[in-house]
Length: 157
Image 1 (cartoon, rainbow, N blue to C red):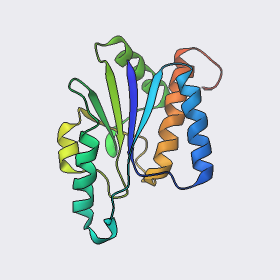
Image 2 (image 1 turned 60 degrees about the vertical axis):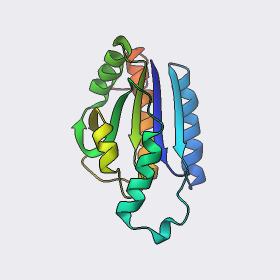
Image 3 (image 1 turned 120 degrees about the horizontal axis):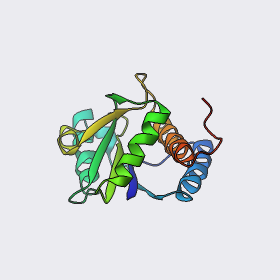
Image 4 (image 1 turned 90 degrees about the vertical axis):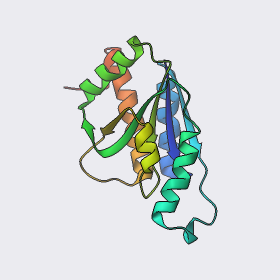
């Protein structure tokens, strides 16, 4: 199973970039994982929030393949603790899914078109985080899930 994380826009803070790169390399020791970045829209300052979501949504949908299992990271989605998320990842690995695609929207969230293509929504928290921070939080949880599945000492309970 390939796991793909799709997000919109460049990560601006160099400290976040460094941490994201660190977790990216850690995760790839355990599984095939890639990040696909949707470029920032040009002239987005002149667009309404809705139009920006729609245009970003079109670009996100282009990243999907037929048969992908699409998980939208959304504060209104299903909440899992770290152990349950590890079990979820393990179940997806055991299924016939070739690709599981996790999606983080831009600053204004996801378009209705993207929501209609998603198979499920998952929340990292009921709190709202910046879309840039969510990138790091998700990567840390995916790394943690892999260490749990491999019975390593990273996760303490």
